[in-house]
Amino acid sequence: MREREIGGKYFKLGSALDQAVQDQIVEVIARNLYAFAWSASDMLGINSDFLFHRLTMDPKVRPVRQRRRKLLSVDHIREIQYP
Image (tube, rainbow, N blue to C red; front, side, top):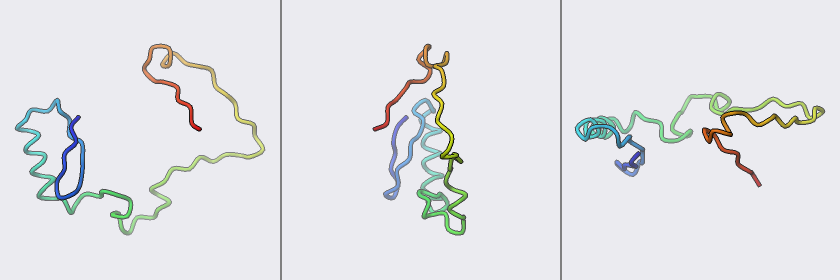
């Protein structure tokens, strides 16, 4: 994955793509830079409630720690600790 920059906007492009295909994609993005939403503020007219995910949690219910699963043991996912 390579990070590319066009007109002050950064995007990632798969490095496994053929160079000719990468060049075509960059050309299309450069020609249509105005058509892409680079941040939530670029999406005018879209309700912000639609853009964000919220978890509905009942404060009276105690959280339950789930058991570790096979994905963790085969290193497909990893456990992280948030401060």
